[in-house]
Amino acid sequence: MDSRTIIDRCFTDNIATIEKVRNQNTQEIESIADMVYRTFNNNKRIFFCGNGGSAADCQHMAAEYVGRFKKERKGYPAIALTVDTSIITSVSNDYSFETIFARQLEALAVPGDLLIAYSTSGNSKNIIEVLKKAKSMGITSIGMTGQSGGDMNKLTDTLIKIPSNITARIQEAHLLLGHIVCEIVDQRLN
Image 1 (cartoon, rainbow, N blue to C red):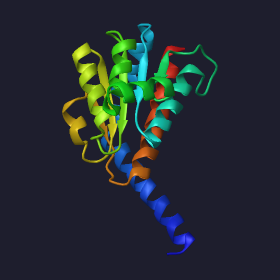
Image 2: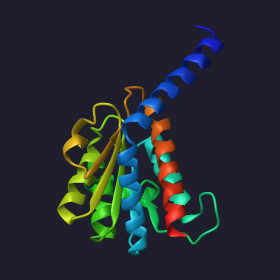
Image 3: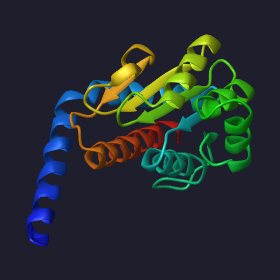
Image 4: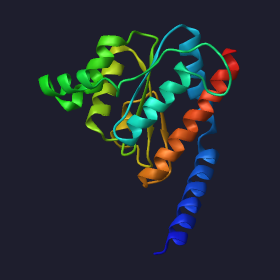
């Protein structure tokens, strides 16, 4: 397969996935924007978590809220649970890798905070554990996943399932949705 074919296929797959998301998830996107807005408006925090590329998306979205998105505004409290290597490695060593996010949520979150968890498969064990912890603490959770939703189907308050089984297309859609929510929230908070 030549480069041009790969380029064309990737653009075609991305556009088709984004169109499906647009047609299927508008109400859920508005609901998520409402949850994020209420969280910040009530002086509470958002916690993000995910693995690999999803961890990078978490850090990216936390930066959009703490820094700024499109316009100048005050920073909002958003924390990526993926960035503290000392906590991640100590919890992995002393307990298990499956608890790296749940342990942080237990230590940092309070009722009224919001958890946004990313897993393209919906089955990442550390994501499942943090969602269980959120539920036990009364923390509202949003899941961002791929087509099947995996185990996240039964553990989140709101779940966006990207209609694809291709990790790259799922992550591209997650980032777009994160930016859309951020723009809506920016407009409402200022």
